[in-house]
Length: 117
Image 1: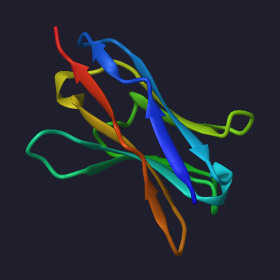
Image 2 (image 1 turned 180 degrees about the horizontal axis):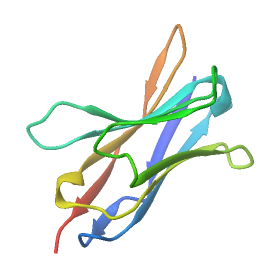
Image 3 (image 1 turned 90 degrees about the vertical axis):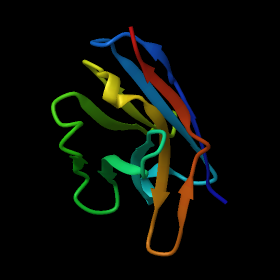
């Protein structure tokens, strides 16, 4: 059973940075397509960034994240990270880590990111 645990969220001022981490246990993150999603109050969960470990190895981003966010994997720690720069109030949300393959999908419990002055 794969377990995902997010960390690194918090309160940051507009223009600030945060680095979220998703600790993967039960398997190597390289066995899955890894992704970060977010959900703001009253909104649907939306895809932020994807790391395609099982295919091209490429990263893809939502338009709102392009140029500001970067997803990466750390094999030594078996974590997937989301570096977020130049944060905006509209980035405020609970951020979730997701791992999926052809048969299964796994979610973490989420970490709160609040961007406010």
